Length: 111
Image (cartoon, rainbow, N blue to C red; front, side, top):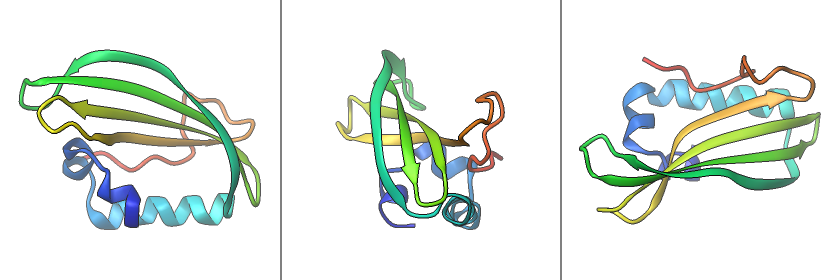
């Protein structure tokens, strides 16, 4: 699971088991193949509150990516807690090309 989980926010750890997170990554690798290139941008950046009620900043990052087998759109919600200072991943959704964004093709399951 590597770097993906190293940068996961507490919310991501709480709502998913290690097996569920690994299954998500395995599914994406099987469907999409290896990452080739991508162009991303921060869509929104806003002040937020973390799970402990502290000050945080939330960013929504979207990337149009090219993979070995097909193109996909990736959306990550990132959180930067003022008390910690590092960005971490709160959610990670993937939509293969031509799939409506209302229903992600794969997202780590929530408890």
